[in-house]
Every structure is written in C-alpha cells, then in structure tokens.
Length: 344
Image (cartoon, rainbow, N blue to C red; front, top):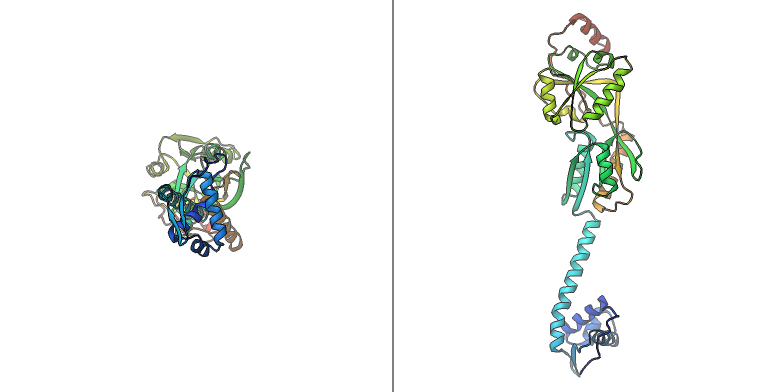
C-alpha cells in the first residue's frame, strides 16, 4: 500500500509516536488501544494520520493484527529514540525544578567562615547536594553588574541599598570587630569605642572589602576630627591578618570572620557597630536552584528575627592575654568600667 506525499506543514504529534510504538509492540491496534485506554478505531485513525504525514505505510494490516513494514521498522527505532530523549528531558527539567541538580552562582562580600551565610550554604548543601554552588568574591558594583546580566544569581552584600533593576531583601546583621596584635594595649578591653582607635594606623586589602573598610574608617574617625592613616596592602584577607600580627596596623572584620584563628592576633567588638547584610538578585532570574536558596535564606532570616540574633561564640577572639601597654593603669580602669568588673 502506497501513501501520499508527507504534509510538510503538519508536525508529527507526540501522541502519534506513542500510539505507533504501542501498536508495534502489541502487534494489534485493539491490544494497543486497551493498553493506552483508547478505542481500536482511535488508534487506527491516529496511525493512519501518522502514515499520511510521513508519506509511507508503517504497518501491513491483517485480520489477525498488524505487522511492521520495512519503513515501519526503520521508523520504530527512530521513534523509540525520540520518546526516550523526550522522557529524559522531562525528567531532567522536573529534577531542575525540584533543585535536585543545577548550579547557583553566588557573589560574596564577607567571610563564610561562620555565621548566617555559612549556616545557609551548609543547610542548602544538605538538602540539595547535587546542586553546584559557585562562589565569587568581588565588590558590590561588580556583583550587581553581573546580576543584571544574569551572570550571577545572587549576591550577599553589606547594607540595605536598593539597586536599580534588582530586588533587595535584608537578611541578617553582624557586629564589627577590630583586629589587634596580641601585645596591643586595647586587648585589655572586652569591647572598644571609636575614640580608642583615633590615634591608630590601619591596613586594608586592595581586594574586596578593603575599599569599603577604608571608607568606613574615614567616616567614623572623621567624626572625631581625625584623618586616619590607612595603608593599602595588595594581599587577600588571609594574608592581611598576619600583617596585623607583626604590627603593620589594625584592620576591621565582620563577626563571621572572628572564628578564624590567626597566630598573633585577636578581635575586639566596636561598641554600637552593627553591619546589615542583604541578598540582591534580578527579578528576571528564573533559576529554580537559586529560588530555593533565596527561599531558604528568607526562612532562616525569619527564624532569626523571631528568636533574636544568631550570635557567634560570645568569647570569639577574646581569649588573648593582655600584654604590655603604654598606660596600664588607665587601660585597666577603662576595662573595669566597660566590663563591669571591679578594678584591681
């Protein structure tokens, strides 16, 4: 039996391939219909439409059933390949929708040594272990530019600034700590104030968030009538703190960094200095893996707001023994006053 030339303008429907495969496997339109929950005539009609579309007969019809033609045998192999590819693609898409795999590109601007962001990434990895998390250091402007181009899914930045073309949600906050050499006189204090830092020299990294720390120091100390001496070091954060240890200057870190123990340095919180952190992303981003991360971050932030802050160890970086000071009696009195302990 010869069929008419295929109708090029009519696409082959997915269901036609399934009906064809079922008929080939059962050797009968009636049995195929029973397996598919269709009538024999419905299957027969669909197969006839398919044969008209491709311009070839796929089955020999017999009273006892159907048998594949040579063209039908060739088409069966292709049809099964197409069905498998579509089924696999559907499973992949569903898995991505469930965030079972994929990737999330995250811009960071602070340490992930501990704190909210470390807890978030750890919890996300437990629930979505097949998702790749790609971290990128950088400054806020670079991260936001990448987010607008959808080259970055989300950035966790300091502050609560609204960025054009982006969504922003505040999530958590951290205290600000001064990093001191162990022998520094300010190590006698449990916490320090900006006036204690007015005469100090500072170092910052050339890489993020060095510029932000520099700007913060200038703003705070300018209010005390001081213009701080700040040297830029062309090293990362991990090499900046050893420079503090050898006396090249002090620096600042957020609370998450204070769990990192570096020989020769300790940390002291600055009174009243709280640094907010926000998530920034593009509203056009439809990456399911990222959406799950954002949802988890919001849930964690809500729990934090209900239960209060999520502090690090209250003794973080405060175990150093005070050493020599320029004016021990004065520092001891200040320490007693701020810590509430009787003076010696």
